[in-house]
Length: 344
Image (cartoon, rainbow, N blue to C red):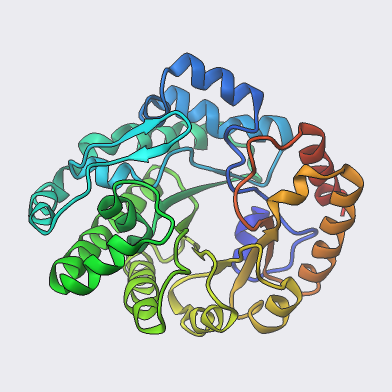
């Protein structure tokens, strides 16, 4: 059996399996070379040859237990007809949507596979080339996080436009959330049909809400997505990553674990607390601070070993970072992390 799937199903493994968020990306020199050849970020996402190559690059270099599909959370609004560009050094740019635009986007929900088929081809290409003990993870963005980009027009410091929109235009915003749930579940289902063996849903901006808005915008949509996907694919483990939420909110998620297997932990969560309170109800995943990878191999080995000792005390732990690998991370530091996990 594959170690990552064993851990997600709360079964014993010889050592904690591991992968890293943003493991395929700007920290790798081979990625930077391919990005330059491709021309632009979306050219990488929508070209199956490039997408397959980028997804596999970190596995060739480091031999992780899992490959996560190389793509972007914003391919869903793009497939629905919202323009999307990536400006160098500025991140994604989209024309902010209005209430009236939601109907236009909804009209395209049955046509998204025309845009997304190259991504499914990437999944198939990666699956064919994995070693038998390695897992391919599919992914998408969560409704709240994706909606912030659609309404703000890009990244935001406080998500004020989206919060205001969701309260002033409650019916329209709920319609947008339902649209994103429906299309994202379909997107993940198609990834699974193409070969994805587990999936992760990223709610990167989950931490900005009042309690009432948290339940409406984060908790309920994520749980609904997990249930709908589990009804379609009961054998495929689901990992939720509501980044930045409070420990008691993680406990709320763990109490609703009927339709998902894993909870990703961000850097702010005490792993020993999560081991005691969450692990066993769900598989916990995380949560090394990516900034530590900018220090020294000695510091990294010490910290990683302590985390592995905590997580491996009982079944249900995957080693990962608390967020993505930083572009400036030295290769020797990533090598120290990998060596420490593999030799644990």
